[in-house]
Image (cartoon, rainbow, N blue to C red; front, side):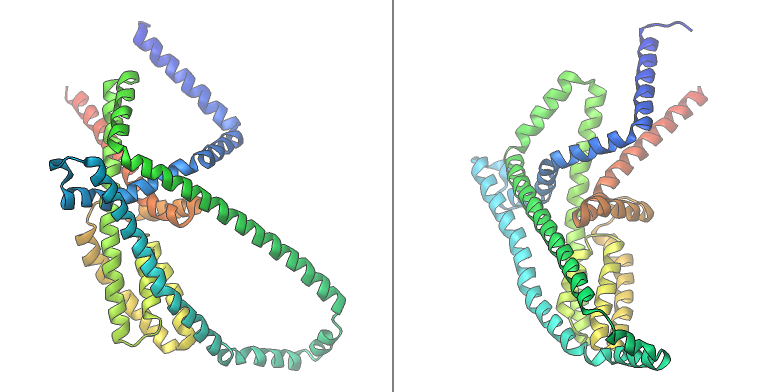
Length: 374
């Protein structure tokens, strides 16, 4: 074997790769901590990119369909107006949902509060049965040390206060990250063509043309996948929620509005969102009427089949292109790391990775077939 420059370079790359892998195996704790620190540091930028992707969908439609930005001058003014209209549209939808849900939620809590005393008589019966079975149980309750109960209560209150402080600090931290991310998103959207051009110039200067083209293809795939997923999924979720609200209203099932809105929101998470709405809705209705809860479950399962077999394939189609099993795994992993937002964005991200891996595997198989045919 002749050790020319190409072979020497490949050997050096393999040695470096093996050394890195060995270091990761023996120092995986440091590596995971480094990743967590990097993600935490870059979180405002990550949030900003996600917000930019979401806002870019309506902004692009307004620019091209309403103002026809390609055929007009004053692109900066058109972009500013389009961005403002996009923000008004999205925040307006969120505000409308909150305006509809909050009164329904207050009424639901009030109704549950009224119904609970009627449905908790079985607890008193259990207490009476315990006294009958264990005659000493009532004496034990009387002999309980009041001082120890107070001490336990004080200790519990300290834990509750600590949990409340942690929750508030976490909420404020997330709110600050969202605000910074929102500002970053606005800068990205205003100057996205220039940023894209600069990124291409840097890649062309420092990377091989083949690598540059592959990276550009990944970004183009990411853009098209996110756009298709977001528009299709939102339209499908909205239509499914409206149909569900109409059917619940016809059957005179309680909490039709709040459950339908919840369904529209959770439907953005494929496969998992429907299960969340099914469980929450069944519990809410069961407090009022178990029979109506049964009808609700039957209605949900029927409409879920209609949506999954007819609506979803027609509206969303194969824009995601991810098998059901991998979509479920992606949603679970994304949710465990980034919460609700992670469950939503994990599907298109996994779809991009799946498409890249599928293309790479097909290329490798094609190369092997060409070699064997020769």
